[in-house]
Length: 98
Image (spheres, rainbow, N blue to C red):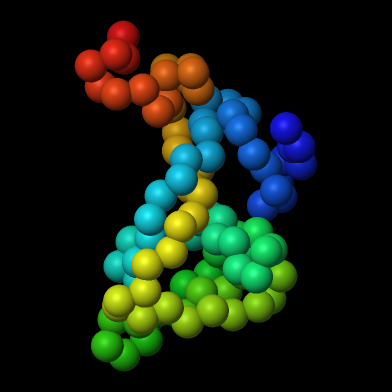
């Protein structure tokens, strides 16, 4: 799989015990570093601004802006750190972790 560290195009297991995991985000749950696909382009969130009514304005590393409202649901990739540094166990259910 392609890999460009420090770029939103990173796919698959990441370095240093972390993996990119798919998550559903809302205006309440979006975080810095989330990677959202917009118009076929992967865009990493680099800044967030709270707007009235619970909406948020997202700033991407490209400089583009996206406003999401409280009812907006988007699929994103989020860097998830793995305790113990073993990415192979990052997405395993708790029952199977050792």
